[in-house]
Image (cartoon, rainbow, N blue to C red; front, side):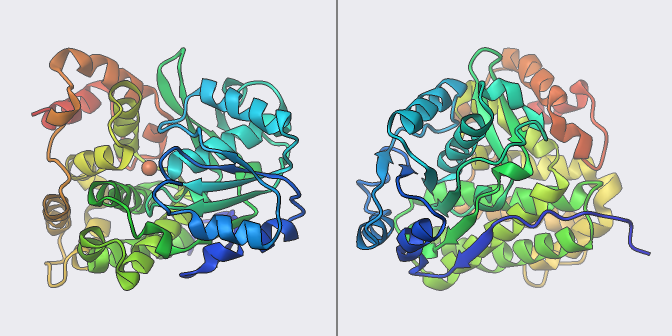
Amino acid sequence: MVKAFQIASGPRVRFGRGEAAQVGEEAKGLGMTKPMLVTDPGLTSSGALDSVIKGLEDSVVEYVFYDQAEANPSDTSILAARDFFGENGCDGFIAAGGGSTMDTAKTTLAIVANGGVPSDYYGRGKATKPGPPLITVPTTAGTGSEVTMSSIVTDTKLMIKTVLADDSLFAKLAVVDSALLAKLPSHIAAGAMMDALTHAIESVGSPASNPWTEALAFESIARIGAHGRAYVDDPSDPEAADAISLAAMLAGRAFTNTGLGIVHSLAHPLGAYHGLHHGTANGIFLPPVMEFNLPAMRDAYARMAPLLKEGAAHTAEAAIDAIRELNTDIGIPGSLREADVVNEDLDVLAKDAAESHQVNTNPVPSTQEDLKRLLLAVLE
Ligand SMILES: [Fe+2]
């Protein structure tokens, strides 16, 4: 018998190479007359957004350009984005960028619709009023933010990375065009992809995992196993880039329904305090956390092993080995050495991790001491 479950399916998706050129027509169709085009500094100069901008201009959609989305967006950056939206009379969002850019648009949307400041809506189900329409256009393959109902924000007073989540944060449309990934530097492609793989694996481990999310997560894992190395080697390879874009989106749809686990609990404070790339941090923590979770996950990990590495034994250990091998091959470090973390930082990092809501959806209960041990295991 299947245990009862619920699914929130999220935005309509346009997937395919060249689809970004349709963003202008889609914005018009959604009733936007003056969208705020949210992106980050540097992305436009790379030419990654040329097709999106051309599409907007061809469709004669007047848009306002905002390239101040931060990496690990802070609550103060969200207030600046909200003011910009209001001052320019915008009526919709087009978020073209990585996870931080899409999350900037989602958190801004939440406070435009509900009033107040980001901290009023931390947690699930608080920012409930529908906001202006949002189109997400990912330029990395990893975060899945294009199809999730959650948004990460860094609180500058509490010094934590935390989450806002509600159905109202779903985009109206996600345009997933893997041609936008062509110029990604390898280390960003690698980190973002490990974020997607972590989303898939942590979704399977959640107590809320169900046949629907599991199908998405396993398909995501299989595509990363088959195409991950080729993609990081050359993100302009259409077959590999399509596969990893799809993997990121499938994992996003899975975890937005199930929640994540303690890889994310451990990775978020490293982003807030040490600026470590989110996906890279996940890649570092994933193997030791899988070892920690073995008592509950042996069968599921064994099923993942041959998907991660062709010909691997159907054992949980083989899956963990395959991930360590993948990390090495794509340049993910095996420790936090490069992140300037010292022994004295560990208590604060472990405390923040223990207070994160993802500990509740990890397959094995963890104490602050357990989390400190996991940090210590990757310190050097
Ligand atoms: Fe993530």
